[in-house]
Length: 89
Image (cartoon, rainbow, N blue to C red):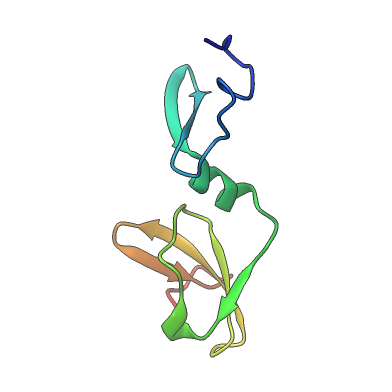
């Protein structure tokens, strides 16, 4: 058994469906690695309005080539995309 904080875990690589446990204002939260990667990644997805991704996190950006500007995910349930002025787009 690996010690807390050590990697790799018994020789196994982490998968996108694995989670990382973090502390947020005194409470713990399990964050899926694929969500964490999307949030921390520097790459911006782009494409037409009809191909917008299902956002994984609030704040996820997307360059909408139909509109010609960036939009960001305001909420994930329901999915709401907004422009820089905060207007639904």
